[in-house]
Structures are given as structure tokens and as C-alpha cells.
Length: 185
Image 1 (cartoon, rainbow, N blue to C red):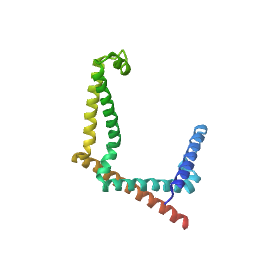
Image 2 (image 1 turned 120 degrees about the horizontal axis):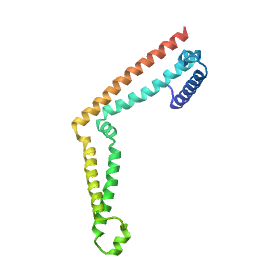
Image 3 (image 1 turned 60 degrees about the horizontal axis):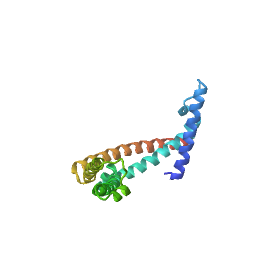
Image 4 (image 1 turned 120 degrees about the vertical axis):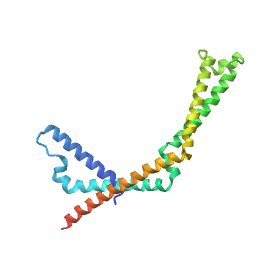
């Protein structure tokens, strides 16, 4: 298997070659499709397969990890870290809005210090309602980690990904082995 550095190098080389072929084909109507060129058949095809094997191996490992760690799989799929961060931000905003609603009818000096003149009490109350609804929505999303149906659906998805990636990986490895065996003959 190749390293990440080799992967980046091969991938860049392949992209540059394909871009060059596309430019050539736009300038010349009789240009050859890049996969039919000698350079692709001899060198870049092998590098392309090695890149595919590298990426697919990475995906298979990730899928396997999530299959063996369902709680992490659900957290990743449902973006729970992001939801928790948004929940905390919304909670802070709600506390600030409730503070503003308390001081709205208090002394004019404090009101001018914290609240713009063009903001009404109703505006603050609307924002409080929105923040509370948002918090409820985020709570439901965060609590989905414990929902058996969600867990089952996410695990089925990772199982499908794992099977598909394993099949693609096997196919790429088989093709690479065939090419390498032909070269040794």
C-alpha cells in the first residue's frame, strides 16, 4: 500500500495529466481519450489503482470502526458535536435575552446601556421564543443518539458502505494484481 504522501503525489500527477488531455482534446478534434494513451496504460493506470486502493482502504477502516462503535457512528452521522455547540451558543443567547427582558422596564440608564432604542419588548420576546424553540429542536437532535431506530438506520448505512467499499477494494486489488502479473511475464 502507498503512503499518504505518495497518494497526494500520484493524485496530482493523474489530475494534471487528465487536465492536459482535456485541453488537448478541446484544441484537437482527433485527440485520443486519456485512458487510451500509452502513458495511461503503462504508468498512470497503476498509480490510479493504487490511489483507489489507498482511499478505499481508508473508507473500509472508517466504516469498520463505526460498525464496531455505534455510539460514535450516530454522533458523526447526526453531527452531534455541532448540535451541542449550537445548543450551548443558543443557551447563552437565551440567557442574555432573558436578562434584556428583565431590564427592559427597569431604570432608563440600564436600559440605554444594554438595549438599542429601536428595539421593543415584543422584539425581545420574539427572540426569546425563537431561541427556546431552537433549544427544543437541538435537544431532540442530541437525544437522537439514544433512539434505537436512528441507531439502526445509521448502522445499516455504515454496513452498506462497508460492503460496497470492500467490493470496490477487492476489485481494484484484483485488477492491480493482474496488471502487475502481466508486466512480470
